[in-house]
Image (tube, rainbow, N blue to C red; front, side, top):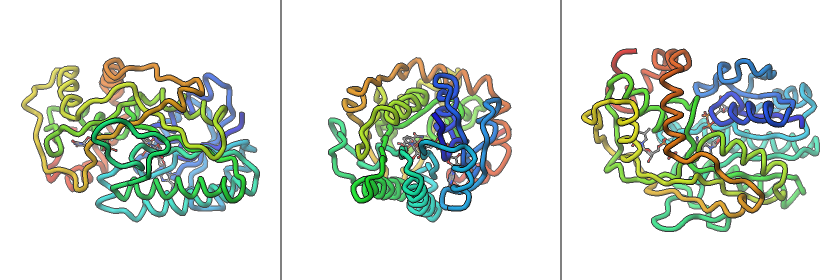
Length: 332
Ligand code: NAD
Ligand code: TYD
């Protein structure tokens, strides 16, 4: 299949591209703005053409579509960090609202199928039980609110124009090549460097962990077998409170537990996310990687791939870290 993958230089997008080429022999073109989170290194060795540009730019989108003769668009392009959306929401509105609209118009003009990659955060927080695709959207941060807006726009294009659009809502992903602003890679790298491990609030918030390759496979599966106009939840096999995640990382890295530090909570912090995934399982997808195994693989990957993270730990990231945590990182 010929695919235009938007945001394909990021964490999940690049895993998707790798799997589509290796397992399905797809022809892929990537369109990516190469923000702080998008990296050419993530596509190294795959031989994929990369068009540098924003999904909100119709000229660049048209160029990328012409280049590969795409049969479908898969959209990963997004601003993805809740803490950044609290500090600076502008880019979230631009990419999620305007960008998704430009892609929908392009898909409509060319008669293409489009898959929008979304998140469990659009449903908000849940104390007990799990969200289904019928649950109301109650996003709580500028990140999740703009993602929910994009989902609604996508659904409207199927309803109004008959566009073959699908939505995949994933739970918290983790694995190789995740930017170290997110909980798991941040804690792994800090633990390996002897830096403090900043736990927000009481650390008892619960996330539903999904290994990145499992999400990438689910997206391909929904693209091929899903019903246009439908949304599919893709939840991980295990839930775990943050503090427990951090303790396991301490164990796996051999760092002292005294590095754990409680810091002020995130404003509007969602307590628990949990997705029911019966609908996508009925299509024939199931997760393959349990949290214990995936976390071990992830720690090993960061340990073995200093060349990937060293430039991040020595660049703009240090200024971001200082703003976010009010302290600087230790050695590079
Ligand atoms: P990421 O931050 O690693 O990558 C995002 C990519 O999008 C980067 O390559 C970036 O350069 C690119 N990008 C940003 N704005 C762009 C724009 N305007 N035009 C073109 N490219 C742009 O994010 P990720 O974790 O790989 O997330 C990918 C998608 O999956 C997002 O839509 C996110 O909402 C969704 N998602 C993520 C998770 C998670 O836990 N990481 C869970 C569920 C869903
Ligand atoms: P994060 O990886 O930012 O994902 P999300 O907010 O999309 O779930 O955070 C995961 C959880 O970890 C969330 O409850 C916030 C918490 N967290 C910390 O306790 N400390 C940190 O330094 C970070 C980045 C997150």
